[in-house]
Image (cartoon, rainbow, N blue to C red; front, top):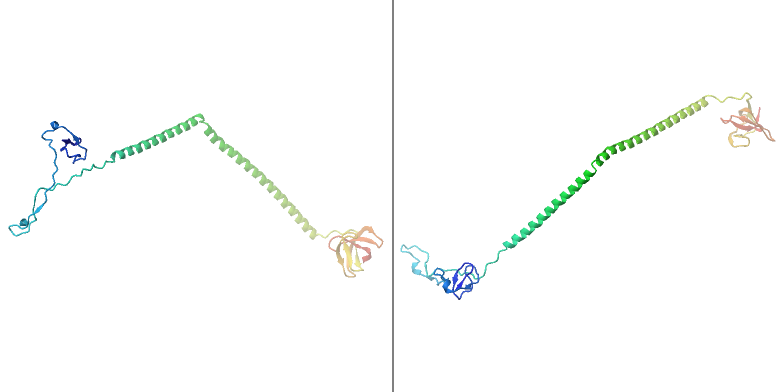
Length: 255
């Protein structure tokens, strides 16, 4: 006899696999088999016989056909069931959870270590930050005051220079206005003369640059005195014929 090691079902010697769970049967002695452990015998179902006499009832109504014979027993597959992947899935989930837990623990430890280092540095120099915060505004204030004072001095200097320039401008304007209104004083020995040989050049200095020219005979010019410069032809005299002091030669005029 043969016996299933999983479900303990008993089979004949010609059966190799359990029809319930597909396990391989093992041989056992007949003395260990009780009456309740009778071998399981698989029988083929008998063919179904159709009875036409039962298609109609005594009342003339159609009835479903009846079948005779042994009930049909579906064949049991002898192939072993597919193995479950539950164990593999559980192992994979456990591995992922272990890795994630290790990463979290590492991050927590790193954060605690960084916090301890910061606290230690703060404990070593507790007053450095406060001292820096107190001195920095003072330094900035001092620099700002120095720049403001420098700008103030430069502005005052510009104001003084501007005032000086304005005073000089006013003085020059007053002097110009006075010179235009008051005629230049005549020397005590000034006299008049007439042009006798035009065109006569009035120069800035004896034999110097020509300032203007008297082109009409008989033109009256003021003679302001002698320059003291003489040549072979005569003497150079001062005149204001051009509106400013110039000189004219005595050969061009007659008193």
